[in-house]
Each structure stands twice: as structure tokens, then as C-alpha cells.
Length: 472
Image 1: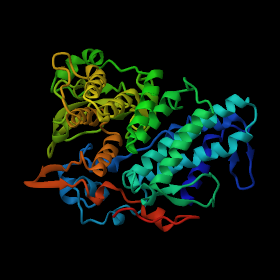
Image 2 (image 1 turned 90 degrees about the vertical axis):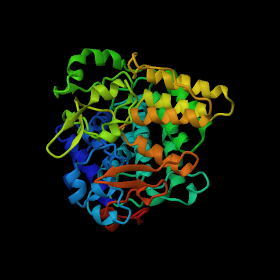
Image 3 (image 1 turned 30 degrees about the horizontal axis):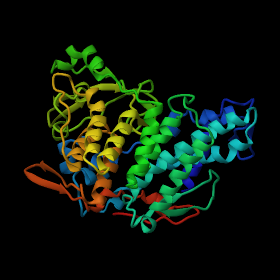
């Protein structure tokens, strides 16, 4: 862990290196921020605070395409997850660095520093100070949610207190003691952090897209309570988020703008991503796959994954096009730009609300759930293909909601988290299957592969704490 706190301190130095009028140079060469503006500037450094890839989760659920030759011939962490290699020791393959751990704890180190030091910041009012601290608490909660669901088993109300979780660290100082908290401890911390952000008065309209607003925090709480299977609380917070912001992007208008290019099977000219910082749906923008420092192409997906989209889904028509190379046929990403894949946006909150409505007792709530689901679908499915959702039972409704949510949240970690949650619950557990080179491959709902392994360097050099693996 020492490495990740050091990374945070180096970020402090690099971001603030041009602020000589406001920063003292300490004897060891570390530049220390003093004013609130110095500290707040750290939150605008997207590469270090708003960039949290989850690619190993995408490989596991096959949301990210891997070439056939790599699947046959390469022995690495990527192919172990993508090909569901139960017998392969992933600890050996994750020997040095892994994005979720490195980036995640780098972010936590920075926001911990803000939480500790902003109370001493100069040149600000108390309200301004509280606002910056509210952002730091909210971001820490979001990041903890991703890390714990990546490296630990899904939350089970009966087992969470005894299920090993992830490192909990509350300081940005080198040498700070920390411990590996249980899954319940981590969830309790997330709830506490989100509530602290509200208590500090996190604004309805934040400074920028990379600063979470009040609706983002309510959506984050809805996520947490959904994972805890507290559907009443999740619904309350989903409604609170949507009361503040409920916009949905018009994919039909966007599709029509580029229809000629999209419908031409030979035209692979890239289209600018509409899912960037200014998208009307954003509550908090955080890059996932795709470096935030420059425009990136959308991720390629397999033919099998492309087939799971609903007919007429304009997001899939805009984002992917079938392509054949010398060795593979797959769907090539057709967008370029920036993507809110590790933040939170309104469609996810609608779909959390829909699931919570479906899980409530009584037949009327199924129709309520479908009405909420269809608000999202109407903005995604072309009018020529759109039909209202039909379901008469909770199970049928949840199946429809899952299909839309998996497709809506593709390339983010959320489908992976949802699959783990359903598998742990049991009622809606599913096996994943695929064909490759004439063989059928299956990923069981109970496979240990659903829990990722910590990087070996985090295990071997944990700093002032002890970290044990949760998987293999």
C-alpha cells in the first residue's frame, strides 16, 4: 500500500509544480498545497482522480473482444479471465500492476489527503471548504464500491461481516496503518462517506462534470443499497437522484445525424462519442476504458456479444460495426472520444429504480417497473422496432431489466457487479457459455473467477498492514 500513497503524493507534486506563489517546497522536495484552490485543482486532474479502468472484469464477462490467436497462444491474466481458465493460478499472472488497484488506491490517496488537509486550507470561506471536502468524500465512496466489488465476493447480508474485503485506509500520509476490512465494513464506509458528502452540502450543481453533484451521491447510495439487497432504500435514493436530474440523451437524433455513415457497411470512419463530459445524462463523469488525456476509440466486441442487443438498439448501431480482419470477425468500435464508464449517469439510476419496483410485492409494481424501464428503452430503441415491454411476473420483469441494463452499461464494471450480485443471491443466477474452436466453455455462477486477485506486489509489499488474497 505504501506505493499507492506515494503515488498520490507524487501527483500532488506534479499537479502543483507551477504554483510557486502558493506552495512551500518542503525539505524532501515535496510541494505542499496551501490554498483551497490548490487542493481543488487536484480533483480536475482527470488521469489521476477520474480514471478507473476495470478491463479484467470486462474480459471475464466477455464484454471486451480478445483476438482468437491470443486466446489460443497467450498465457496472461487477460486470457485467463476471457477463456474462464478455472485451473490457472491468476496470482502468478497478476505479478506487478493492475489498473483497478493502482488507479483506485491512487485516487483514494489523493482524496484522503484532501479530507485531511482541506480543513487547514487558506483563502476560502467555510462553505467553499465544505464543498471541496464533499467532493472528496463522494469520490472515495464511489471508488471503494468499484474496488470491493472487483476484489471481494458480492455482498451477502448473512455473510458480509465475515467476508474478507479490501484495504481500508483513511490517510494520505506515508506509513499510515491500515487493515483489510470485511465486505460489511467497506459498505458501511461507503454509506458513511456518501452521507458525509450530503451533510457537507454537496451542491445540486457541481463545479464541473468531474465533480460529483447531489444527484450523483443519491445515485451512488442507490447502487450501494441495491448491492446490499435493501431494495426499499435503493428505490428511495434512486427517486431522490431522478428528482434532481432525469434527462435522457436522444439517441434517435444522434443516429439520424450519422445515418448514412452508420448504414454503410464499408464506412469505418469514426464518429465523435456523445458520452463525453457534456452528455446530458451525466451525474458524475469518470473515465473507465479510454485514457482521459486524449480521445480514444470505443472498445471492440465479439459477434456473440453484439447479438445480445435488442433489435433496433441505436446505441449499438452507432457504436459498433461488423468487421473482418485476416484472422477474426468482430464488431469494431466506431466512436472516438471520451466515455463516462466509471462515473454515474441517469440511465443506470432509472434501471436501479425499475429493478427495485419489480422486487416490491404486488402485481401493480411489475407494471410500474416496466414503465420505468421503457422510459430508457424509448430513448434507445428505434421507433420502427420499439414495442412496450411485457411481463406478468417479477422474474420476467427482472429478465427484461437485466437485458437493457447489461447493454446500457456495457464496457463499464456495472454488468460484472450485477452478475456477481445475482449469482450470490441465487434466484437469478446464470452460467455464461460460449463456443470457441469447436469447444463449449462455461463460467459457473459459483466460480472463484468472479472475484479478482490482488496484484502480487500489493500482497508482497503491503506497507503498514497485511493483505491476503480473496481468490486465485
